[in-house]
Image (cartoon, rainbow over all chains, first blue to last red; front, side):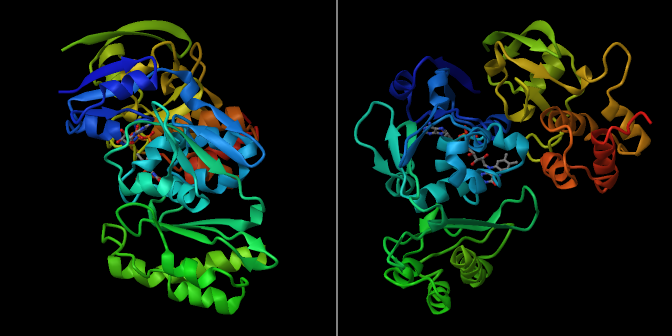
Length: 266
Length: 158
Ligand SMILES: Cc1cc2nc3c(=O)[nH]c(=O)nc-3n(C[C@H](O)[C@H](O)[C@H](O)COP(=O)(O)OP(=O)(O)OC[C@H]3O[C@@H](n4cnc5c(N)ncnc54)[C@H](O)[C@@H]3O)c2cc1C
């Protein structure tokens, strides 16, 4: 049976956390477990409205843990994240699903976390301390405590960031895979390429092969073909009800090249 | 097990009831409060039959912890008709045969009403997007889309 504990601040909840407890964000995943009688014994929630705060400055935005996909879509200064937030679930899910919850969503979910990974976002935890790269948080989701906010660098050139979600059902389908690419350019050449895949592994992952193929190059047909060729390098995608591992590997490069071609056209 | 008092507004009227610990908003509304319009479909947020509004925004009642709606305004399909007059959307659903078995209808109506309140002249694409979280296994959606568009165009009571 589930007991519910309510705290005024995230710090208080963080102190009460334990292996028998789960934190309730928007609840779209936790409540499924509660409904099925599979949730941990204790559900912890926090009433602090500050968790839903969005703060945007020139070159970065800070999203509180409790910011929903609908909140992201309502914030004009987060326009670079709109294509991502818009394709997460249906309208009701977007009104509930939070940014922090997406970091912990199991495969095939985590489209927003995947985009944050490509953007090089950093995660602030309750109790302060220095922020940790999303990458590190995704690698070790069990530890780390409660997320307070996520700090997202804004791409200097909006055209340097691209996002694509591939699903069978539209709108509102779950990802066969999703891709985000951050390709900043200096003098026409790509510097600091970051490419991430969703639903191509247990968590969102970077595509090291594609990044290597893109780094230092101009975004032309030959580069795109090489990146597509390396797309699934080192990735071990799962088989699920939506697609087999084989299928995901086969189509990853096709969809990456479509995204890159779109970005090339600007 | 502990029960929690919850004070909230249901379709504009102040209400108070006890929620069981860990109870979702759908069970709470149906069993604790007696509003049977939100339906239990999947219990996983996939079907949308339990769609209600929480402070004006559509949510899936089966995935909302009941005690979190303390102080909130809840809207259900039961609040659409006012003093015996149906909402134009309800009239349009009848005119367009947009309900067959009817199980998805209350959730569909709540989503459609939320759309028209925010965007009185939606495109067909916007209507499709707005009801994308509501499954219907009878109509094939076309009559539902037509019904919503007819109200959007102000032709419901022609
Ligand atoms: C019908 C449906 C469709 C969906 N479609 C998509 C989709 O297209 N793409 C997608 O990515 N996801 C999708 N999801 C999954 C889910 O809605 C999202 O991943 C969402 O962002 C999860 O956030 P939440 O706030 O609801 O999480 P919750 O259910 O509240 O929590 C999920 C996990 O995150 C942990 N958590 C939450 N907040 C914090 C915090 N501040 N600190 C530490 N841990 C925390 C919880 O303890 C829990 O383990 C869908 C879900 C449903 C029901």
